[in-house]
Every structure is written in C-alpha cells, then in structure tokens.
Figure 1 (cartoon, protein in one colour):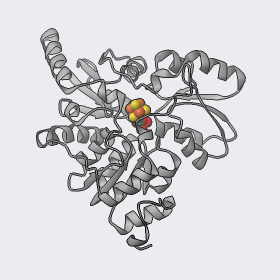
Figure 2 (cartoon, protein in one colour):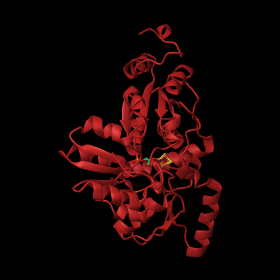
Figure 3 (cartoon, protein in one colour):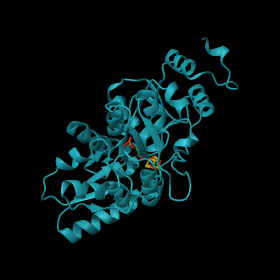
Length: 319
Ligand code: 13P
Ligand code: SF4
C-alpha cells in the first residue's frame, strides 16, 4: 500500500500497519501487555528480556516501541544508532517511578557507610536509565534468578526497585538482599482472598502469578513465573485451566499461541484492575500517528548512556 493512500484519520488493519512500517524502515516492537491490536501490528512481541535482546541484535534504523517508557529507553541504550519512538510519551511505570535516581544515590551512600563497603546494586529492568546508570547489573523477571546467582554469596546486594520480586528471590535463592521499597500498582492489587475463591470455583485449575505479586498471592500459586516463563508453560500444557495473575492482556497471547487451554484472569482486590493503566495509553490511533511523525522520540542523557548500557550488557552476558 502506498504511503499517501493511508491517512491518519483511518487506522488500517494491524497487518497493513506492519507492512507500512516495513516499507518505511521502521521496526515495531510490542510488550505482551499491549492490547491485541498492537501485538498484531508488531514485527516482534516479547517480554522485557526478549525485547532487550531483540533491540541489541536487530540493527534496526528506527524502532517504534509499544510498551512503557523504561522499555523504550532500554531499546535506545542497546541500539543507540536507531531512532526510538513511542506512541505515547506518558506511558510510564509505577514501579520505575518508585525509585528516583537521587534517592538511590543517597541510600547507596548510607549503606556504604553502614556496611563499610559498597553493596553490589542489582536493578530490575523496570527503572529509569538514571537508575540503571547507578547499578552494577540489571535483571528482568526472565533472568533474575541467574543474575543474582552470578553474584558471590558473601557480597552484600541492594536490589531495586521491586520489593516483591526481590523478596521472592531472597526466598527462593536463600539470599538476604536489601530491598528497595517499590512495587507495581497492578500486581500489588491482586488479592489472595479473591484468588482463593476463584481456585475453589475452578478445582483442578493451575494458578500462575508474576513475581511482582505480593508474597501471600505468590504462596497461593502453583507457579511463580515471568511472562515468558508463563508462555512456555501454557504452550507445553494440554487442556488445562490457568488462573493468570499478571496483566490481563497477557491472555491475548496465551489464547493465540496456546488455544488448547482455558484462561481466567485473576481479579484485583476490589475491581477488575488487572490492566496496566500505562500500557493502556498506547492505542492503535497513537501507534499510527507516531509511525508518521517518527515521534515522540526517546533519548537518554549523554552522561547516562555508557554506565546504563554497561549494566544492561552485564545482564546480557549472564543470560
Ligand atoms: P516481564 O519482565 O515479565 O516482561 O514483565 C514486565 C513488567 O512490566 C511486569 O509488570
Ligand atoms: Fe510497570 Fe506494573 Fe505496568 Fe509493568 S504492569 S509496566 S511494572 S506499572
């Protein structure tokens, strides 16, 4: 389809958007928490780790990133020559917002005085480039165990920003990492009471939850997995019913790639608030407009690029 045949007033079908992007040298990436339309329009859909790896290897000239800001920043850090832009610049993340770079710097100084040595700082990828630049190594939900295991056991570790993921790592790996007090507003709202009611209503079902969920919810689950681990599990299962404790758009991918199972979205405490309000800011209309504008562009301040990229590359070297 020729560029001029498509106007900003009418949003074409996802496959046409993807073809138009290809013709214009743009790669569309989407996180699995994006609505189905955006996943269908993307050249590649993945979890945070797969998207980071893709950005590092793709050699793309231009990337339109359907996800949240820290994910687009990560793509820019790992693919610095590419123009990286997003459908909506306001698509942030409550977890990333819970750790400000200046607060982290002050806390690291305090800990260094208290411990008599500088702690190794591990950051979950859900944080800003300014935070990444202060950290030794990054992890995602897909490789957090291996990243923490790569650090000698006698080394003090500060883990930021997710206290739930950090708590799960401490429990499962027998570590005593010091945890930043941050949380994801979506995963924190899953309630163990409503989950148990749902399990009672669906005997034989399998509960899968994300490690960003609080401990009582994780403890009531059959498997605690990042989104890529969940996808692997459901694809290798046959005729099961899964209760899914993560952002509800994930179910679109499950139903597409593993339609042989049934999926039930675990509800929030008092509402169906299992959709990420930041991911939801991206819409087909905004995607279509941003492809034409090649903007808004995401960039990283020059002084942050090298240290933040190094922390990401240390992660990619582990797994
Ligand atoms: P994944 O690391 O599983 O892709 O999850 C990202 C995220 O934002 C979870 O809330
Ligand atoms: Fe951030 Fe939570 Fe949304 Fe993931 S689901 S992007 S952690 S607010």
